[in-house]
Length: 365
Image 1 (cartoon, helix red, strand yellow):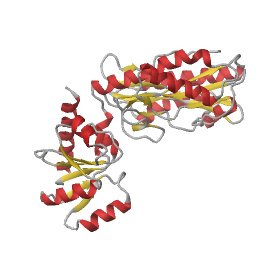
Image 2 (spheres, helix red, strand yellow; image 1 turned 90 degrees about the vertical axis):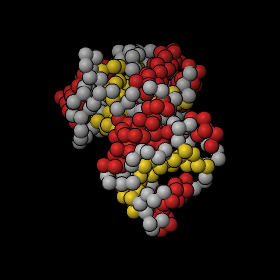
Image 3 (cartoon, helix red, strand yellow; image 1 turned 180 degrees about the horizontal axis):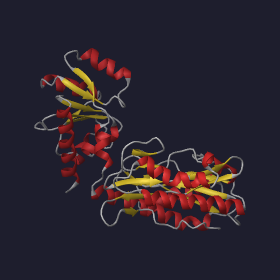
Image 4 (cartoon, one colour; image 1 turned 30 degrees about the vertical axis):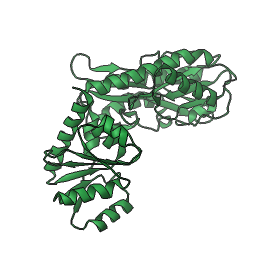
C-alpha cells in the first residue's frame, strides 16, 4: 500500500470514530495529525473529515504550502486560505454539518471562542486523542522510515567516536553528531541533541554548552535523525580516558535494567509492568531515587508520542508499536548514565525488533 492509499485508509478509520461519537465531522488542527492524515507537513493547516467518509476530506492551508499540498495530497480537496479554521467551519456549515468534533488538546481557548461565536449553528464537541490512537500502531512503510533514521543515528555515533576526547566541548560534539547525520542522509536532526559530560550528566535533558570534556568524565549523548518525518531516538554513555569503579557500577546497573525493559516489551504487556521490569532492578541496586523519569515512549512523526511507558501508565503494548527503552541513573554533582534504544514491539516469533543496534558495552575512549 503506497502512502496516499495508507492515508486514505487512516481517514476512513477516523470517519468510523467520528460516526461512533454521533458526530457529522471532525476538524483536525493538530499539525502532526494533519500530516499523518494527508501527508502535508506545514505550520498552518487544518483538515475537515466527515463521518460517512463519502465526501472527500478538505485540507485548508495557506499559499506558502499550496504547491506542496497539490504535490503531496492529490486525493483530498484543497482550499488555499490564511484562516484555515474559519474557512473549514464555513465549509462545514454550508454542507449542513452540525455536530463537529475538535481537538481540545490542540485548539486554543481563543480559537474555540472565535469559532463558537462565529458559527453558532455548529455544535462543537471534543474529539479526544482519536488520531493519536490511530498513530500508535505503525504500518511497514512507517517502520522502514524509522529504521532508516535509526541507521543514520547509529552510523553517526560510530563515526564520531574518535572525536570524543578531552578538550572537545559538549556543543562541538552535538554539532559534529548532527552534521554527520545530515551528511549520511537524514532530513534533519529529530530533536535538539543532548550532550552531557561529567557532572552535567546528572541533568537528564542537559542543553550542551561550552564545557570541555575531561579525562575521567562520563559523557551521555541522546540524539536521533529524522527521515521522511519519522524519528530515531538513541542514547549512549561513554567514559573518557578512564572509568572509575562507581561509574562502571552504575553503568552495569543501567545496562542490565535497559536489557530487562527491552525483554519485557512485548504485545499485551502492560506499560506499567514494562517500566517496573527496569525500575525494580535500579531500585534493588540502591538507585531508585536516582531514576526519576519514565522508562520510555512511543516514537514516530513525533519524538515523544503514545504510548508513554511510566509507573502510572495505563494500557498495554500492541503489535507494530515503535517505542524507546531508556532507563538512567543521575547522581547530583557527579554524573549520570542513560542507555536508550528505539525498538519495534511485534507479535509472533520475533517479539521485538531492535532498530538502534550500535554497541551498549561501556566504551572507554
